[in-house]
Length: 357
Image (cartoon, rainbow, N blue to C red; front, side, top):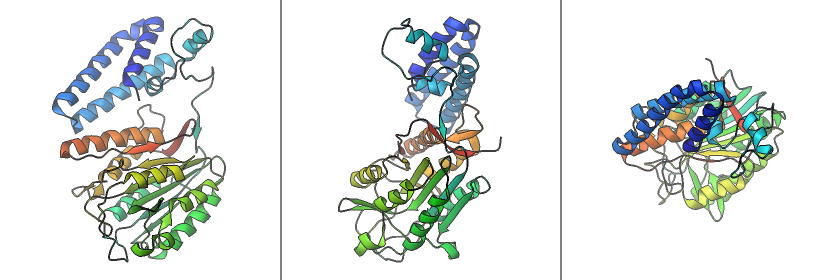
């Protein structure tokens, strides 16, 4: 998101159509510049993040009131309708920009019902696959957040005796829940546990995976993609919180290898994929919160804190921006690298959750 572009666009619009609002804009612009300077000199902190969030909320409110679109959309290169019409008539020079047709609104997918399969695994049957600490608690908290809002949110963890996260159970639930969705629905697959690349394939490790026989006992991303792609739901999301710090697989370090993440993105083409870290990074745990850092900020985002536009719902883009800012701030304070990454090629945006205001 190019905030400097958004500020320039908003200022230009206000000067032309709403000069009385320029005072409010200059105040917010000055606060934004000070916030950036504070982060550059002092580092990112909870206080600077809170101030940034407050500024973004105010800028979105100002842009929505005066321009008819949000500040986030201005940052993405979308232009207000009146300016779009002048551009079409040749009154504006420069490079072409994205725009919304006059009278239309931003396209959102997954606006009807939502369905999910949620998997969290701490303990593995194979001694070569080391245990994790927070995956079950993380996914259980996600389940509690989605319950009542999702049509079905199937939970498979070490603690759900009727739905243990065995390979057959995970694939079985994927097969049934994906097919229950309709065209205007959302399907979410959330996995917290070990992931591994081997011989050109990325695998998610089920509780009964054998390290020596990944191809027949782990869950290949190509199989996950096949089930999800066959779903009638137009909105499809995979969230991966894998490669946790402090736990190894065989003799391998628990990092998001370039091969693993590359294969995940390739196999999940056409599906939005949000991963907890970039290649060669780890997904860090936050012992004091009994959460992974990624899931902690994701849960925070789902309460509505990621909705800077006041829509009443949070989207994949909202969550990605909020979680990335939070995780990077935490990682900077701990002097460790972790940056969540989103691959998203679908036109429009996906509604992830409607929250209680």
